[in-house]
Length: 181
Image (tube, rainbow, N blue to C red; front, side):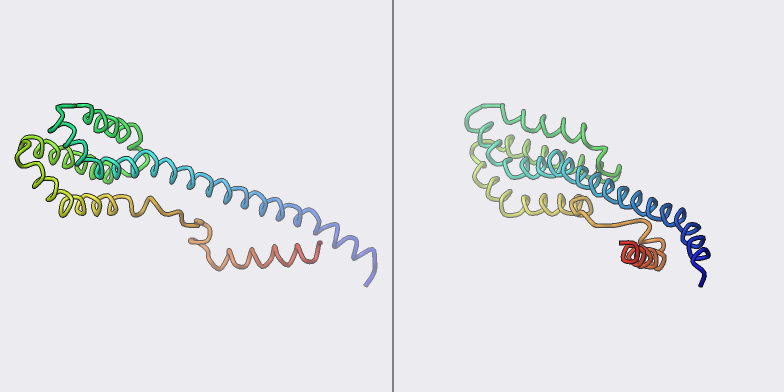
């Protein structure tokens, strides 16, 4: 084969090869930013919604004790703080799940008021019942709501839509990188 012809072929292939490499780099940057976005969403959901409702559910007996035995109503501040977080960060989950979370929060509040209204006489029985039955129900409800949000899956829409194309593109890039470098 003539060297001039080879030079023309390589010159002709140079621009598309650079373009393909540029597209690949852009795609990898998009994947990286998508992973970062998912990680940040995960951290916000976990910090301001999931861990707060779990903390509220687990500390409810101590809040009820504090209010019932000591007439110290500072425990309501924890419930108000959780309400503030739920309202402020509720957009991080779907509308349906935000509604479920609001209902769960209302159930926790109703449970607390019920235990406080029963008074000091029934406090130990109410706390025992809460710890044995209600706590597990509340925790299961929280897990049902947050199950899909507290996982970081490595999903790519391109991989989902065109799995064969994605495999071919990866093989092509690996081939080009091996040949070029």
